[in-house]
Structures are given as structure tokens and as C-alpha cells.
Length: 253
Length: 307
Image 1: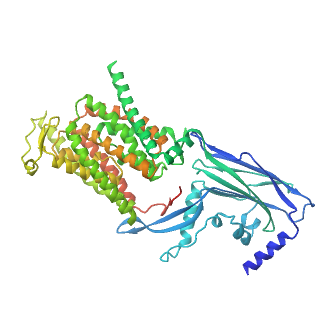
Image 2: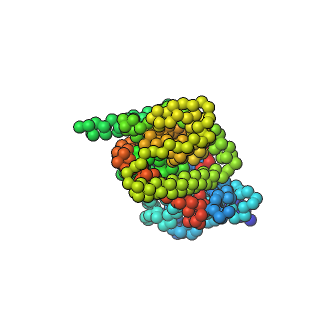
Image 3: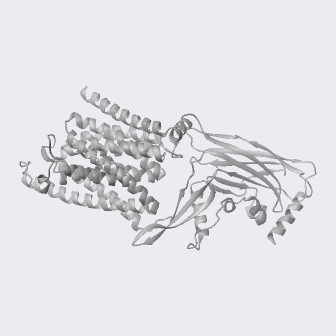
């Protein structure tokens, strides 16, 4: 039934042709992680290009920014033998390291369940969890915990009503990226919806990269691990000797 | 002042890191412990991933121990021959320890085992040391200035073969007990991710009968090599050593270690032991409470094969 409905909606949105399209601007398409990196704010703005007059039913906008996805192991502690220890664990197959969804209004109003399911827009849908082991009945709690923990760290953000939309044409929003960012391609999607159905979508990528010293050290630690280890030890020994020599100089003066 | 750590992939306050390093450095210089049992939990607390905290903590301990051992060399309070014997045992022990660690990891629950190891060993050692050194303090107080050292009774230890003279410690004994002590501490330090000073120091005092002043320098000497070995192992196999984090901790640490060594020379041996015991017990209590009290967040996340 859902599938039929989805197909129906698909046809409906496809019928009139792409009469409304997004023209996008980004304050930056590269985020450089330097030594003093302390988070970054990205301004996403744009306009709607139309070849037909503005329709009566208002257009809504949903913007998502997603960091690279990785599997995450969620563990739960339980009271055993008088201690709190990790017992159950659920593997979440793919969870974005960062995810923000900004909208012009309440998410449930601007986007139907079916469309959410299809485009994986809300945070719950952006996480892919295939299945839990048989002995765990409440696997949904593990996914909830994942969202709650990352939400607390500012890594997952649900920003309802934060997209400013003027004259059904110009839109803009700002997304705060926290300091604890992972490197990678952050896919940025903009959906135009009308009555909960997606009428147009646009996709681009924000590059998040370590630069300069950060980049050099990271690559060295991965590709020349022995050299990197020796470098760490050399720094340690030299610093240790330096402090000792410095202090004995100070004392003997 | 925020700084981004390239390997840990988190941003932390640089001044906080300097302070942490300094604090642990002072302890390291005073007591001859590497401070791994303190720095690692403290790094978890400020949000550094555990694997990075353990590996980078080891690197920091190399620096602070090296700085402190130089200060002890100048005071001639390092027993090199004893240190070398302990080290031979220690390195082979830590190789076995790494193997045990990986085996436990394949079984799961390695976190719990590490915590339990900490609680049990810190508890036993801290408790024993606290009682013993309090008694010593009270005795010293009652009887006035130090009486001449009583000769230790001859025990089984003195009947063992392969005797060697350890001049700085004033000992003539078999190499077997120090080798075994080094080996046992090596195993534990690899499992617990620490230099092992807090186990080594009491073992040298109570098991090998070495004078406290020599114990600190000798323990530091041995810790340098064990933690350097651990650092290399982590850098090569897990790639979890964060140089930027290490530099901040080291900067604070080496300065702290110098200050600590000066303070240590001014305090009486018994006072030093009471302080160390109190600190070991405090960390033990904290770790035990973490296991016993219901945590605020029952769930925790760990990344799998993110590389």
C-alpha cells in the first residue's frame, strides 16, 4: 500500500516537469581543519528558479548536511555481579559522523513519512541499522541512544524552522559544525517540498579536510607509522632532556 | 585556547592539557611513578578517545620519566645494574602482556578486566603502603631521629643462585627475584596501559628491600624503556599516538617533573610513601565507584573499522 502511494506520489511530482529548481550558494565549500580549528559555521543560501507563476500551496525547504557514515557499535551497561558492565551490544551498520537537518517548518508537516523514508531525511532515517542479535528485543533503544549521545555533542542537529524563506524565492540558513569533526565529504542536500511531497532536489558536497601540519602529521601516522613513532619518542626524549638541562642551569646560576 | 588534535579528531583546550601534563609531571618526579594510572583516566574525562589516551599517555610518560631520571642521576640515586635486570624482565613481561591483552580483546569485556585490574592492584598496593608508612611515621615520631637500619633477616630470597652485587642499593642478592618482579610488572603494565611505577616502587621496597631514595630513580629508569616500547607498539599497530596531544602533555610534564624531583628530595621517605598511598587509594576509589554506581548514560558508542 505504501509502495503504491509512493509510486503515485512519484508520478504526481514527475508529471509537471521540473518547473521549480534550486540555485544554490554556499558560504564555503571547503572546511579546513587547522591546529586552532574550533568548529565552523556554514551559510547555505539560494533561490528558486521558476518558469511558471508561484503556485497557491506554499513551497517548503528541507536542507540536510551529512558527514561520512561509519558502522558504530552501541553497548549497554547492565547491573551484573554488583557492578555496571557492558552486556548487550548492537551494531549500527552506518551512522553519519555528523548530521544536520534544517527546515522551514516542523519536519512532520513539511515532509511526509513516505518521502522521508525514500530520501532518508530525518535523523532516524539517515541511520541504517539492519538488525540486532536475536537476544535483544529493544534494538530501537540502541539507535535512540546513538542519536541522543551524538545530539548532546552537537553532532546531530534537528533545526526545525531555522531556514528563512522570503517571497517563496530566497532562502538561507546557517549550520554550526562542532570542533570534533571527522574528515571527509559532507553531502549537502536541498529538498523543495509541497504538501509533504518532494518536488525538486539539489545535491552538493562540502569538503572537510585537515590542512597544513594537521594533514602532514595525520598522513605520517598512517603511512609511515614507524617513523611517526620514532618522531614521538624523539620529541619526548629531547623535551625531557631540555627541561632537565634548563632547570639545572637555572639552579646553578 | 582550543587546539585540534589530528589523530584523536577532537578539539580540546590547550591550557588544560598543559595543566594536566604539569600535574602528572610533579607526581612523576616526586614518587617515581610514571603517572599513567592518572593521565589515562584524566584524558578520557576531557573527551579523548580511550585508545588514543592510552597510547599518547605512554609517550608522555617517556618524556617526564626521562626528565626526572636525569635529575636523579645527578643525585646518584639510580641503581643502573638493578634497573637493567628489572628491565630485561619487564620487556619480556610486557611482550607477553600484549599477547594476553589481545587474547582478552578477542573474548570481549577487556574494558571491564582493565578496570578490575586497576581497582584490585591499586587497592591492595595503596592499602598496604598506607598502613605500613603510617606506622613508620608514627614510630619515627615517637623514637625521634632515625635509628640505624636493622639488617633484614635472611630469607629464601638470599638462598637463590646467580648472585649479583647491586652497589647503589647496598644489596647482594640473586638476579632471579628482580627478574621476576620486572616480568610480573611488565605483564600488568601492558594490560593496564601504564608504565607500572606504582606497582614497581612498592615491589622494590617491600620485596627486594631496596632503600626508598634509590627506588624512585631506578623505577623511572626502567619505566622509560617500557613506555617507549609501548608507544612504538601503539604507533605501529593501532596508529593511536597523537603527537600534538603528546607535545602539550610533555611540555607541562617535563617542567612538572623537575619541580616534583625537588619536592621529593625535601620530603621524608615515610611522608612520600603516605602521600603516594593516599593518591593510589583515591584513584582506586574513583574507579571502583564507576563500576558500582549506576552510570548516568547506560549506553556508549565505539567506532568500528573507521579507517
